[in-house]
Length: 235
Image 1 (cartoon, rainbow, N blue to C red):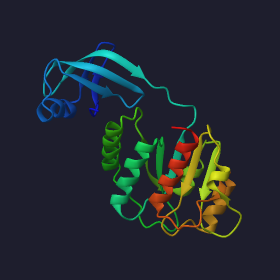
Image 2 (image 1 turned 180 degrees about the vertical axis):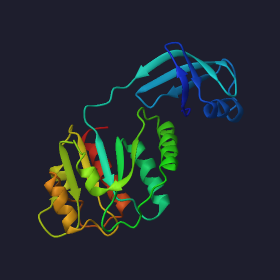
Image 3 (image 1 turned 90 degrees about the vertical axis):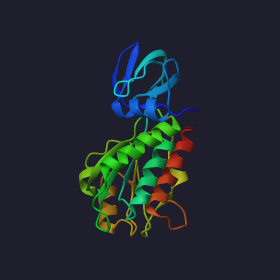
Image 4 (image 1 turned 135 degrees about the vertical axis):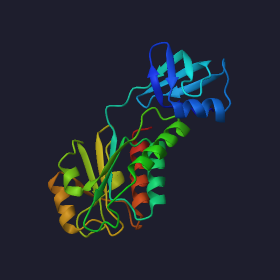
């Protein structure tokens, strides 16, 4: 399957003009020519079947021959996570989140965080590349890193879960996760959330949850819950 293009300078019912970066990639790198068929996604649900009309390196013009739109379900997964120390693992997290179908990733600073910055521009590029490679229809939303308390006050999801390792009543994820609900899941740093942070999250209606007996890396825990959400919703 050909990897679709993403990056539209303009788009109407009949034609698309690719961005300069994508125009150059299409014509100079991939060596497509006038008359060749290509696919384009807009990150908003549409997949366009096109024919190259003008092979300009700055403004590659495409004729649209077919448009297919995929509606978003009325529920989604929002992962709120304290980023791991290793930037390569953050990159991996974003890539796999796109492939699995996560809608939004918000990075937070918690008391035990060991990283308080993320390279948002780089992560956006990784998300776009993963979207193209997996033919995902919607672009992953990635939030800049902020304190945990700032995010908790803005969550609107009906289903809210916080996996943690502290003692106390916790329910296994597969026993509490319900399908077809807007869901937000908090993932702590490598040292886990503090008791105070867990209590704060519970105060914002997050349910204490367990991911089982294994101690997981931060990014592994995130992908585990994303996979469970995908499976239960039959993505």
